[in-house]
Image (cartoon, rainbow, N blue to C red; front, top):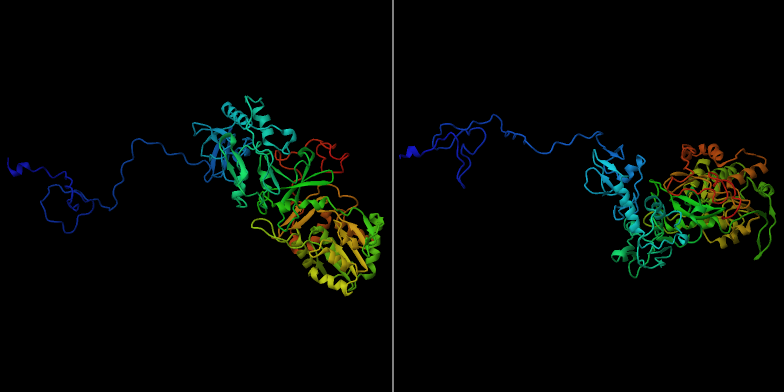
Length: 627
């Protein structure tokens, strides 16, 4: 056979041998080079494409079909219990289900904490999962079908409840959480069966004091880890942990440490059962005897939104109320425990004459409101419009109180300046608590500026009293930022001291006319917090004794001095006087009003627990105290 016979046709180019150069016509796709390399002549060279872009490969014959485009671009559309839900991507299943009226139970989930998915009671059926999935952790998917009420889901909920209650002591009759406990609520809704446990329950520490404010009952704990995650993520003070394994797993502080954070009592709020309890509130009142009123914390200038829990005419606790702009869902321990001045040491009746004279306490005659206002007016009239009269204003008073009081001081008493009283400065922390312990300093500054009054520091008042420059003092609140005993000695030199006060103190003992003032839970009104946000608060219960609001005392004094005003409510005071203050003029009193009931399911008010019919528990004095 000749060499020509062994040559193969060159119409189909063969791949170059391994290691051979690839710039031959058979290996290169593209236009012909201008100077082709020398080599054997081929009969059928490859045809070059007109473009440098390689041809697209044909689509595969098989493969999954493309997902349909979203029904609502930018949102996730799914079906929950037969109802269509349109939600933002990343929306939690629990929150999405709530929008269509489906209630998915949960213990460990909290909207402001990371997801743990360890309580397992929120397991539901989803069309894109072969098994039950936790609703708190599973994201919504386009076209997903979710079912929360199938027999499989209900049996799972019942089984989880039986498991959680297996070693629970079931001591509801002595538990402070009774009436607010999710174990009670969910047992009645999802389980309602007797325990099948044979033998003794696992015993743990029954009363473990974690710190100055919180006590732990480890037997009631269901290890939802809300408290651990809160301390790690919100105040960023990891003082709690989970110790042990299995049935002996428990929440505790680290050895040698205690739960001493200024935010420790928030763990009591987030605990869904009666494991973590407030040492201040423990065994004080049953939840079903308490009414809740939306208000504002007066512990510092942050102005955290709170619910005031009260019974009869006593405040029992503050709880944080959600406000995304200010405190989210939290509050500090110092503010939470600042309610006690509302109950103790109150000025309950008007009186004339100094109680402390030459170091001895003397009885002061009590007067009616009208008699006291007349006595105060008679004492102030001779020194009105003179330099001998000074005005002291406390930033604990509401905007309505200060609007009325400072307008009276300017128009009726001729004051041109106001001394600023209030609580002394304190410590701030890294999260919510501010150094200013007065809730309305910003409001006092706004109102004084709007009325054209000069604010003077409190430190200048005592010297003016000592040297006789000031001989008469009118005080809207008697809280002082300095030593109360020292100021009491200074004000004892004043000939006239008309004081409107919340609480008895060495300063009020020197008042020539003492007028009892109502606190912020005993009337409605507004505060301006540190960042200039105006906030409404509602009245919880009638004022103690003969106390009335500062603005009402101003109305009585004005009437006694021959200039009657027509105010009958804090709302009327605000609407009449606030337009003079630029920062308050645009505030809509009615629209900014917080709801006067808690959201259903959070803290439902009981039915006539203290003798009043449903719907009337916030109004009027109860017929009986307690039950």
